[in-house]
Length: 248
Ligand SMILES: C[S@@+](CC[C@H](N)C(=O)[O-])C[C@H]1O[C@@H](n2cnc3c(N)ncnc32)[C@H](O)[C@@H]1O
Image 1 (cartoon, protein in one colour):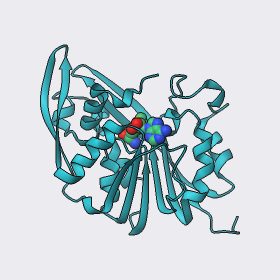
Image 2 (tube, protein in one colour):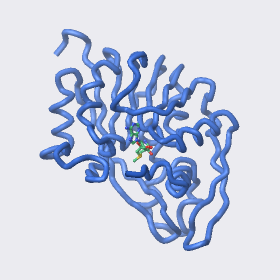
Image 3 (tube, helix red, strand yellow):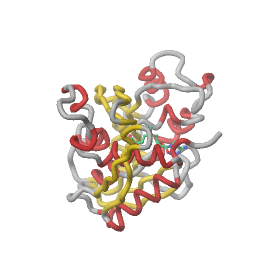
Image 4 (tube, protein in one colour):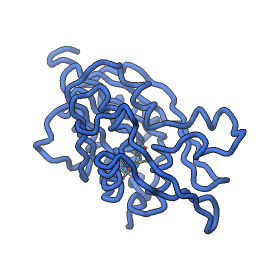
């Protein structure tokens, strides 16, 4: 099956989703609910991660890189991995050149040229982007003080495989941030690998041996497809702390 995250259409949608301003994304007079759903890739970091300096952070399913740049503000080194070569190429250009030109689809043949810009506070020299599979990570990746995986798990063919890897990826006392809109779809995940019940209970089942659940919150997000069509979703964020060894 072809990968939608390699298409020019979805690349442009994600550049707008991660870097677009309110004016670029929404029509004038948009309802408050739509405005509150902007800046998701920023909010999954700033609303979920206790703001203190960290040595190493990992962003899995980083897409075009906005959350990785946010992490670079307070983390000395950020490794950001995505399966899409097109997304990683755009993220690298943003890091190295500071901007990427793209087009916003308005309707039919109607398009508006826009520029995505790396956030001013980002520390690009701290960010390494790489193409990779979150369910088959390289064995020498090491461990991290913070792992962030936004809206990734329900896009994986075998999500439980990643869940079992978190205890070795997150250092004792480190933080794991997961968000998911729980939009389980057969085109990404075979139904036999969907949670039987609520996704949060399934996460607890897989993570509670090694992690303490600190917080759960709703985080809305809005992806613009055209001037008149938006995906409005509500991700469920869960924030976990890796237990110190031997502590339950
Ligand atoms: C729904 S998007 C979320 C992107 C970003 N974290 C965000 O919140 O905007 C899912 C992302 O996961 C990536 N992805 C899908 N399967 C993956 C895999 N096996 N390993 C790493 N990334 C993957 C896709 O390329 C896409 O960038």
